[in-house]
Amino acid sequence: MKPLTIKYGVDEWPPLAQTLVFGLQWLAITIATVIIIGKVVAGLHFDDFDRQLLYMQKLFFVMAISLFFQVVWGHRLPLITGPATVLLVAILAGGGGDIGAIYTSIAAGGAFLVLLSVTGLFSRIALYFTPRVVATILILIALTMTPTILHLIIGALGAETALTNLGFALLLFMAMIIADRYLPGIWKTTMIVWAIVFGSIAYLVMVPPEVWHDRGSLGIVSHFFSGFTTTLVWEPGLLLSFIICFLALSINDLGSIQGVGQIIKPPAMKRRVTAGITVSGLSNMLAGFFGVIGPVNFSMSVGIIAANGNASRLTLIPASLGLLTMAFFPGVVAFVWNVPSVVVGTILLYIMCAQLAAGLMVACGSHGFSFQDGMIIGIPMMVSILISYLPPPVKAAFPPLLMPVLGNGFVMGVVAVLILEHLIYPREPLSPAASASAEPLSKGPDQRCA
Image 1 (cartoon, rainbow, N blue to C red):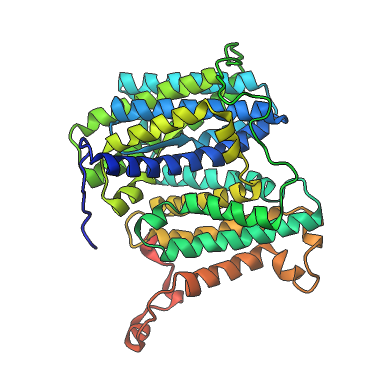
Image 2: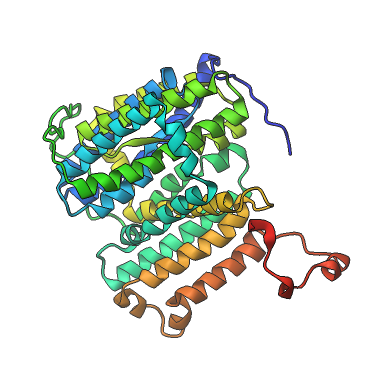
């Protein structure tokens, strides 16, 4: 393996031009994460666009503040901050309840995280999150998100339009998998950004929107210091659900911080972990106060550092200031809001497949099980589950000749794994000698995941 080359250390300022380029790169990736999760939650809570837009403004603001303080005072590492998928799962579960109760629970969960961090209890609780527990959590998040992904792709559309969306999603999804396999370096690590850009253009050309959202009734510049979740609404069951999700969030944070720490090896990692989780807790308290989903540190930062050699945390400061500026311009937020839901759903499907692959990797440890192995198994699982959830009217719109194949989750899962194994992620064929020496399947299961 080629050794990682670090051009700029964690506390170094690159030249101004380089700083701005790196900052723009971080900004684009962070915006992509905010769009994907933010659109789902805002659409879940509100029907009118003005309130959805206001929600997104607040979300951009909270993510900007969280990112800035993580980089300056918290973990002080080059780590992206974005909305937490694990909290999205909890919000979806409590979606029919009081919004105040949801965000009271997020604020309380953030306070719980701060308490765990500053008292040192977190290190003791983390011992109970064994690799098998973490693997199960990662897999459960992916599987729990499948109804939401399917709704984003086909929505409440008629069978014919739903079938069009389903076909488009399949093509975009396959394009992302192929891009993940063949794109080099920074192109691969920023693939989600390009998927949003080119996927949105392709879909809007194919299916022109009936409504193009602008800033609505809001001004060119608008504040959002109103409508906070200031009334505490306590629902014990919902609060317990969020506390469990916050435990999972803390482990995610720990993994992301340690993952970046392992490749750039900064000093005082113990202090960085404690401060990073503390800032995550405080940021979630702020999110609960504003009434938006809370943040978490994203592990995708490792791939970006490896691709461009930039480990400077200071290049994330321009990214955080860019997010903060966007928060006050509803027209800019409205522009990114126009990303079609089918594109958001497809990208979320890809992210959940990657999460499923990561869960399988954690479960199998280091016994020769790679991320690509996880994708080869995880993608067919997700495809099979999504097809199994398809409403009967959508399945009925499939061509009759292909209905037994396209409408069968098991069959499509088998087809998907064959395509991935032999076309997209092909392995070197075994030589005759190797084939002869290979143990037959009857001797027992593969022990790589033992």
